[in-house]
Image (cartoon, rainbow, N blue to C red; front, side):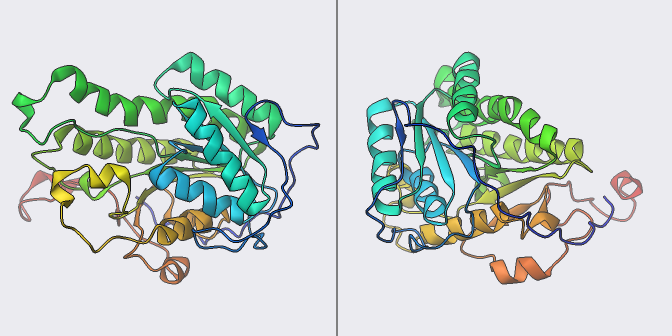
Amino acid sequence: MPEKGPLEGPRPPHRSPARGEPRDGASGPSQAQGGTRDGAPAECSTLQGQVVVITGASTGIGRHLVDGLAARGAAVAGLARTERRLAEAMAEVTQATGARTLAVAADVTDRAAVDRAAARVADELGRVDLLVNNAGVIDAAEVPVWEADPDQWWSVVTSHIRGAQLLVRAVVPGMLARGHGRVVNLASGMSTRANRDYSAYSVAKTGLMRLTEALTLSLQGSGLHAFDVAPGVVDTPMTRSMDMWRGFEDWTAPERVVEIVAAIAGGELDAWSGRFLRAGTDDVDTLRRLTPEGAARQLRLQPYGQDDSLTLD
């Protein structure tokens, strides 16, 4: 792959169209403007005027991202399957930050539901600047591939791959029409190496990286960018449920995940489009200064030696 060009600076902030009172599930500005738990005081406005869509928004990493990006001034639409929990979560974020939020109950693997959700976001919040594909489930049991329930195994892959593809299908055309937008797919350490006990999750996260790269290639020259962001091991209900993390204490602070995604939203890391970033170990200031070359931070086969035909590609 040719070397990336210079880092493109962030676009000037823009505001969503003025609207009337929000519909059911939407939260307007609040007078209570305290800080949030995720890395930015409520008065921080680095993403003022941006519209963000986050899937899996009611809990875990998705909820942290809603908190942190709303605190930076973004209007945030959260998608999740459980309507009541999602509405409560988004209302709490508005109460804490004063940001406008929108709760949209939707199963990301349901094409019609995703299309309705995207239409509602466009109608109530306006154009989408950042899509974060975070929703997804994990293997029900830590077992080898042949012992996994086939339907549950496939549902894990579907939740990550089909969900992301449907959101891209629903949101990216609007970004292309404006020549501006960014997509973040939540990756994992299991995107880059297999795991015998979480084979479906590993397959799904690896496939998601390929989706990001294919999307990036399709978007070249459009002003749009796509990224893989691995959040590290954040203390969430999902990671607590996994036997492999039992007794683990070296958690990645969720603020580090928010920091990277916020930098992406602000146009500071466009040189890393199509590549893998890892919260907690990657220093954002260092990423800002670097322009990666070749296949750095991308999935590639390693040749067995100089005579390997792979070296001729």
